[in-house]
Amino acid sequence: MKFGLLLTAGTHAVEQTRAAEAQGFDSVFYADSPVLFGDPYVTMAAAAVQTTRVTVGVAVTNPLTRSAPVTATCIAALNAFAPRRIVLGL
Image (cartoon, rainbow, N blue to C red; front, side, top):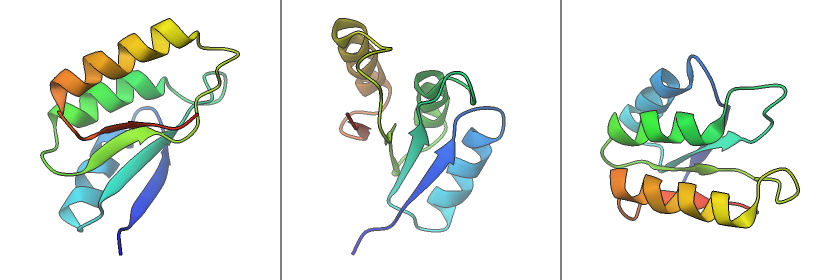
């Protein structure tokens, strides 16, 4: 069985992600709500370089507010920081 968390992107998300990894969680997902929280892709980048094992991802991104080519480019760039640890929910 695998366990994951849903966090809001922003100020404390990277610290919370490191703590989740230390506690044995397998994944951490960030909500994509740019009006309410920080940007999940920026948070994923910071978390990816400060963790070694945990999978990080966007819980659900909105294809109406984020274009497909830009989203694909973001995910591909993030994969360079953390190969095989980046996931995307649509």
